Amino acid sequence: MADVHTKVQRSYNMSRIKSKNTTPEMLVRRFLHAKGFRYKLHESKLPGKPDIVLTKYKTIIFVHGCYWHGHSDCKDYVVPKTRTSWWLSKIGKNISRDLLATTALENDGWKVITLWGCQLEGKTKIKTLAQLPSLIRES
Ligand SMILES: [Zn+2]
Image (cartoon, rainbow, N blue to C red; front, side, top):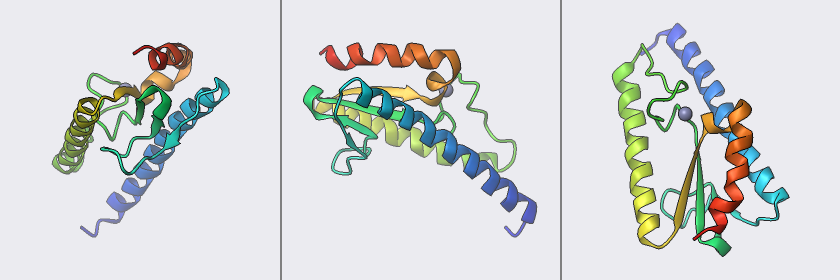
């Protein structure tokens, strides 16, 4: 499709999504580090290449962008009005990949914590982060 407007629009969306995905993960990493947790990042040997791996606690943390990972009932996940089926299939694939990874990890004895972008924004952010250490430590 050689539609210039679509292309421009798409790269605009991409850049917005990308920065939105990166920031919440950094937030979680900085918080954990400050609390004394040590972790590995983007562990490619594990299913789903988890964002944060806390080996000591056998815990995995995924930080999902609400948009790419199709957070249900979320204000940040709005199905695009253009190229809808393309997006739905793309996001649908991400959702099933996430589900498969989580199941595989849990079967291997990992505890999987999924954090959503919208849980790491504004006031909710503080609450989400505050709960994290006990979530990690409890087994
Ligand atoms: Zn969300």
